[in-house]
Image (cartoon, rainbow, N blue to C red; front, side, top):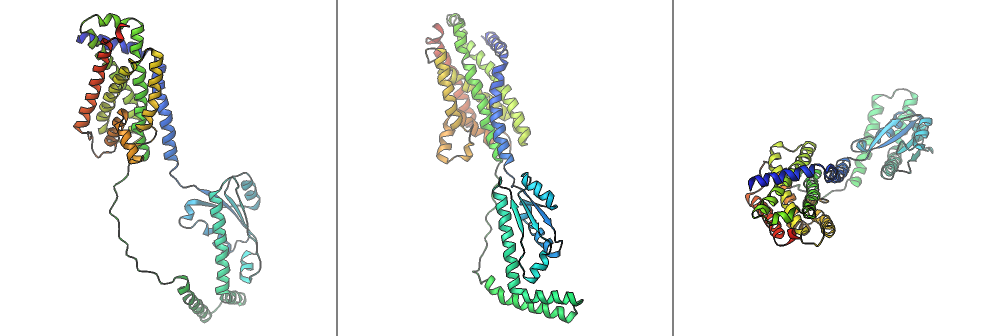
Length: 410
């Protein structure tokens, strides 16, 4: 029987190897979906950055302060300030190459000190929404600050201006102006900073580091490839029946079990190859410890054989090959949806995740996710291994019984 098992496995592998297109589809669709999901997650983590063009025609201390205000602290992480000429700024904002274009006219500082009207021109990019709005808000805040600075310190500003025009101010004058400014600030400070309640800050306990969300998608993407391949390989029983292979086997005692076992071994090789490719790419991309590779490979490969066995038993319940393929193909998408191929189980509500973990592929995905995110390898418990082995053996036994009970004789 063992030699027949080996012969059966070699025969299936030789036949399946000829269908390279199917193998590419089994891997291609999950890779495409997984690549899109990963690129969206990894590419969407940064903050948006805008460009503010400034044409400073005044080139004064005050105009430099205005230009520098847009790149201070956290605002500097959102807005990149570039000094340009009016011609260049107009051309670039019209071409949509910046979020905003601010023109500071000549005589801006003089107009501010003399409290005469002056116009700052700000043009924004209509194709953008968030960053131009931030630039407009900052500009309005700067204008408000200038207005209130004039109301509060207007006389001192004028004294400094007059002293600068008449020559260098002496130390007594500078000290007097500084004292006047300090008195005004002390008078206004209580209105700007009213007494507040005492606040005791309690540091929360350190949170455990959260795994990369893109890594949580990996087990579901791998099982998507396994589901596609296991369902397609299970349809091979129908091809064997149409060729008359099963009718000859069912009349030979003991050969049918070896035939099913041979198909299981061939399926294990195919699942192992698919798992090796997907896990290698996933481990390399997400920088997962390679010490977990063997345990993950064995878990996925054995799970793939179990899915193959149960898909085969299910397909043999239908009257023809077309009906069997149609129903099992339709079944794939609810299984992928519930089992974490489209949404990680850890990101779903508890009641939905609980249902997903009860599905066969969800059970495999859940344990594989734990293995990939655990501190050490071989974190999958013995009970889970025994459960997966039991499911696989029972699926193969059910397939053998279905062959003997009538499917092989038709």
